[in-house]
Image (cartoon, rainbow, N blue to C red; front, side, top):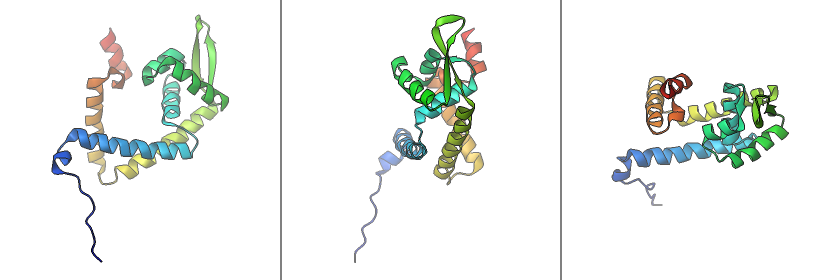
Length: 163
C-alpha cells in the first residue's frame, strides 16, 4: 500500500506571521468554544462574567463597550445570564436610566469553572512551549493588542492616559 504524505503548508504561508496567528487563533477559538459550550457556556459568557467580577458595579453600556459589542446584543446575553442566576441587574441609584450589573455568588463560582476550562485548553494548546516561552508569547501578544486597542491596557495605565 502506498502512503501519501500529509498535505503540507507552502513555505510562503509558514513564513507569514499573519497566516500563522490567524490559523492558530481559529484553532484555539474553536477548541475553547467547543469546551465551553459542552459545559453550557459561551466565550461571551466568559467575557461578561470576567468583566463584572473584575469591576463590582458595571453598567450595561460599559460592559458592551469593554467587549466591543453592540449594546442591544448585550441585553440578550445579560438576560440569559440573569435567568441562570449568574448576574444581577439593578437600577443605578445615581442615574435611573442605567442598570448596574454584578456577579452573583453562583456567577463567581461558574466563572471559576470557566477559567479552569479555558486554562486547560490553553495548556493543551501551548504544550510544545515551556513556561518561559509561554510568558514571552503572552507578553508579545499583549504588546500588539495594546497597540491596536487601548482596552487591552491595564486599567491604571488606561486611566493615566485619559488624564
